[in-house]
Length: 448
Image (cartoon, rainbow, N blue to C red; front, side, top):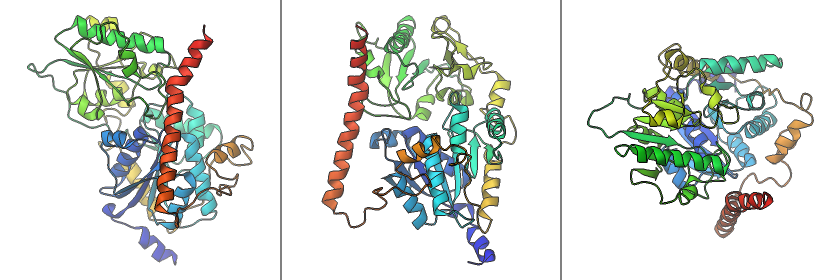
């Protein structure tokens, strides 16, 4: 195709963009799909769920509340075959770092030279408080690496420049799900406290039991308040992180059970925040959603302020507090300068935090061809690390599918597909049972 025609074919009105979102968990699907809609008004959105331990269930997807025109479950090789066959304008990689790296190398294998290929977008679903260098370098090679704040954008560029990699892809945006009505305290409204739990923070059963008992204790101390324990998943379901000690099961161990004004709830976080007067968490991204609305928000210090908990990210926020302080009536308010730096209030620049990303995306779409994907990790820079990452996704060191990797299921009978699907679900269920039941029991026996 001549370059002039090629450029014209990529110059789409905002509503015509064909966008594919590949996600590996419920929260990353939410981030990826909402990011796609922030980058383009009314895109033709096709969703893909990367098959793995955290593949979301239908219930989890329904709770997220973000729908696609089409949604299917795929392997990495199947996704690569899809984007080679179908002409997508944009691909959003809402994945853990290793999976992003695998797809980037797979795309490089498909288009090793400058070519008509989709624009590749990736980023983080929330607070980046661990594995900063590792996660960022695994995402290097995408055309846009989205940073959720001015603070993150500076950190991201420093990492890339520190290894001599191109930092031009780093683009400041904001979390795409920061929305909702501004908090207004109504005198006739019941005071609602929400404890937003996390699957893996804290990790130990004793610490999780402590937090649950403190939430129940707060409810007993304030019988006029409703205390909601906002859960991420049901037992047996997985999210972005493993949950070995579900709060649902821990609640069964509280003597006398939870008080009447304290209960476990599911549901879309935005809808829960609509009725929240105080948000309490260890370090959940829900804190940023709450602060964006102006809701009093407490980041717990009961277990210390530690990197392993992620609450160190909130240093300077004005939100660090203990359950004792909350019991005494404290309602923490976010520090305006900290909020602006974190991209929570939109005060860090233009009113639309995605304007720069849309401008960069438009410039890339106007190019007749895009350069070959150039990740920092190659067989030259990471000869030991990279092959293992690619092999986990059934790709060879050059990014091509390994022999036996399933690319398509054409010609497969309906019965065979049904059997394969049910066997996969059974295996996934057995894995989750092992994580949540067997593994903790073995650890407890080892402590005897």
